[in-house]
Length: 97
Image 1 (cartoon, one colour):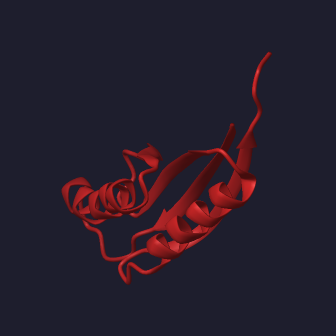
Image 2 (cartoon, one colour):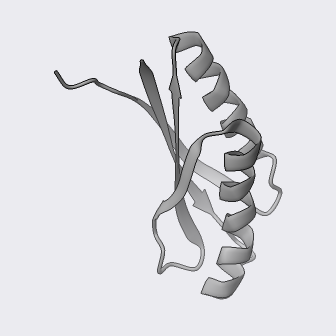
């Protein structure tokens, strides 16, 4: 089993309220969940208007497949014109035992 996580820091220059922020972040998170069957959530900067941190994780039988899915998720996030990606960090989750 292979688990790959992706954490992305986003800048949302057009957002003027937390409600507007949700309207931008929700389609990113929900869309990735539906399209790529990954776990996805807003994981940081919840109280900041112009910033968001989102996290994604995929579980796969092969390293290659996990990489491919996370590549697609990252491209998907980059495709939103109202979102500027400031940073993206991938990390493999180690099995305990």
